[in-house]
Length: 546
Image (cartoon, rainbow, N blue to C red; front, top):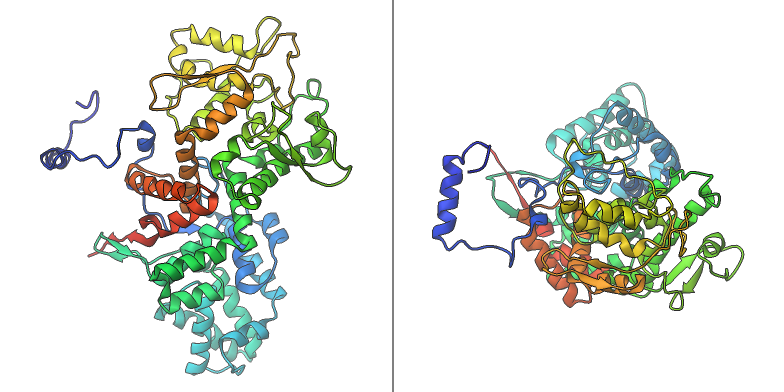
């Protein structure tokens, strides 16, 4: 013990002994394999490069300059890891980033009224080498770099101004050069916090808390009101903290940030590069793909923000926001011929909820694979765990044919002792989606003439018995009412907000966030509010220093 691995170390044995002698207290009600998927030690990551979207939003919040077009053209695309593209450990910087940040810094300053911006931080516009210029630069640095700057940074940026003065430059040129330097600083490109200490948790500083709140709720740097609250030390007051959270959640930037969450979680960007086989799916075109992506985003806004419903209602809300071509694709009569419209789907039993939307259904590929769709439900909705297939197994899904629907192919896998143990755990989760083809069109008979069914069963992780359902709408309702799905949605929001995989050390905190959010209605607002109040945001773990 452990089998075919090194024995426990002396420290590990002592830790286990101490835990037993103290009563073997477990932090959660039950042991859940999903809680232990990610290694411990990753629970504190607050050195994070800004994503492209966060960089654009931070520039807009800091300078009131729009750099979106240029940033998307120059910066490398953020790469997904652990289900999101803002995962901190994956946010590296290469030479392309460095060159892009340099060019963008110049572009930003060229778009900026430099003298007007500089006047926010000091009255003098005289280029001098005394403390007046130093104080001016320090005040500007606090705003641009989102916190107090060190004496070394003061010297560096003041040195830039001194160099400009020495070659005959004026005040405006000095500020331009200082700002370009700040825009290329790790302090701007990354979210960096003070980590020195004795290895023990500490409360984050008021300004660090303001930064965390702002990037969680807005995906951008704090505004002046939040910064002033932090500088006054008021964010520790629960009433003032709640007032700031509510104010920020009422800002359109909160809606935009939440749309980034749903877009990233469901990987909606893949629709732009999806290329179904034209002979099988002649109706597919880039505009239809764009409308599918838009439907999911606007559905999310409609349910979560306009109607203020719980996140779990995303599973079965029989409403959607469709543009004309997608409405026709769904078999609905378009309400107009140009723009989006809200559709009541209460009389359309096969539609209603994320899993019935084409943007999500395309995860199954051209053959509407029950493997891919089932794994999506298992991992992303039920937070279930299943082992990867052995290296020797051919994972290429067999195509369906006459007499062999995707369900029939799945059932043949269940009978195979090599595959059945695992596949029987997740493929039945997709049985209710069999009536949707590879691009999400609804039909009762597939292209080979095989009749299709909607019935199936769901085995929720932790339960002994699977729950049977007879129709798509029953499946959607089961998911919407499931406590497991509700918990999973909380985990997903928290993971995106923190920008890192969640570990066993986080589980107790996430459970507390979930309970508090459910008591407050279970909405996106409730989860965000509970998260910011929690120790996951209010505290940080320092690194032990000599």
